[in-house]
Length: 441
Image (cartoon, rainbow, N blue to C red; front, side, top):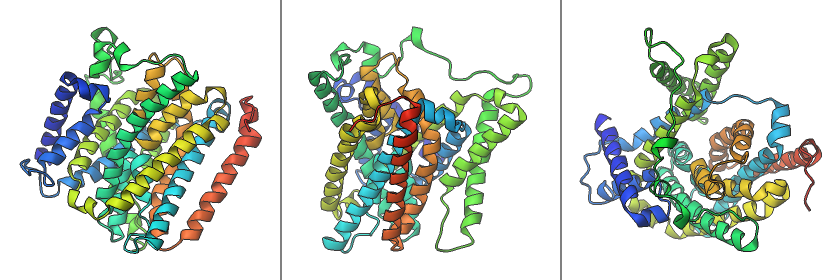
């Protein structure tokens, strides 16, 4: 494990050096973790095979997903229903519609392909698109492991491939959307590459704008603040593994993913800290940066472990799924978003495009192009809307693969459709009124 993590560290350092000094990589806004993962793929078992990876190095991605969701749970406060409704109700509703409909669309398209064109495909084939697109590499690993436990080992490689492709689609198509919006007069401020300063192009922060990551909350005479925060993440991660194994032992048909117990465990610790008054001694930045750091390492492990030979046998159905999924997501952002998000729909829509196809980081990157100083409240609204929405994400990610593999197609479709109708009803009847937002026809 030490060698594996050291290799990922070296790849990240190499990727950052290339990103700083290579102008073409800057122009396409290449994330360093993706670049490092691609180098790892070329130099790894699927390429020239010169890196001394451990035999089970790919399993490190599964460990990191538990760490990621533990940190996420520890940093998550549950907002009140009134706060969600008044501040970010429409964004919550759109997030729910986009999330559930993308998973449902991908599931049905994959089932259609498996039924009429490629009978050998797993009936849950379409789910790997949403797992990679919306959830990124972390969710791709989770869903891939669930399918592996259900007997489909190729799902992990396919999900990681969709996650990697989604990042490129997020930035490339996102830039086209921004340029089209400028021509149509939807936006006026557009920070193109040529107008960025040298620090922005290289992905650096100017020395006079750098900020501290950790807020000292504990006296170093007793224990270092960072040590306590990392200890909490470690304890919750261990809890996630043992509790998931225990709950899964009751039935061979249902396996509880450790990311679910990690997220719940993190929120439980957070709630206890609030009730006992310890909340004031926790620093959210540490948990947020721990999650972001884990994500970068996870991406490198994930891309490096892609089995290229597996992709060859799925190439055509993957292309159909990729193109169809991209077009459907464009429909969500360019047609549904204006009708649900009101006057400031484009800022929220372009951010949503980033996380619907890549990651939240991609959404932030696109948002910064039209709002460099982040003066708008999109991120704040997203943070409020995300927490109740994350419950739906956890349920879909853990249950949808089981439903598709075990043949509960109609049940999955009906449950998703009923939930979509319920969200639209709540949005139209309650949320639009609470925010004073007119409903666009």
